[in-house]
Image 1 (cartoon, rainbow, N blue to C red):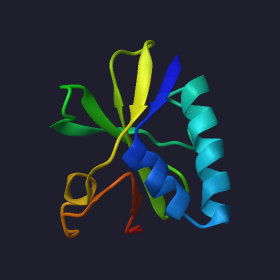
Image 2 (image 1 turned 135 degrees about the vertical axis):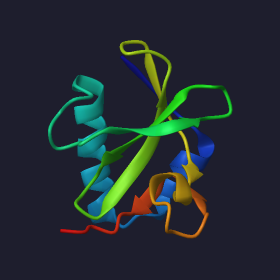
Image 3 (image 1 turned 90 degrees about the vertical axis):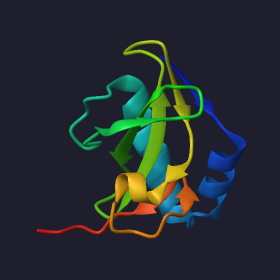
Image 4 (image 1 turned 30 degrees about the vertical axis):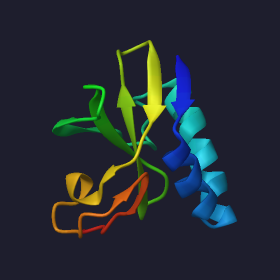
Length: 106
């Protein structure tokens, strides 16, 4: 599987604190190895698609942070792309980013 980053994703990543960057690196490594890795808790974003028509997904960085990505196929490539936060969290303001603070509810 290949990983493609977009310029907006890189900019969002660079704005993260160093601790979260390390956690994001770890999550991305898991993603490349196994989309179903239990720590990722990857989920498809319903019918959401990116500008190229690929299915949008999100996965866990920490209990409080998620990142978004698009997949072209189950084994081909993953593009790390920003999406509207309201697609991940319907109650959140519609900002466009690659990383989201996830409101955990027990």
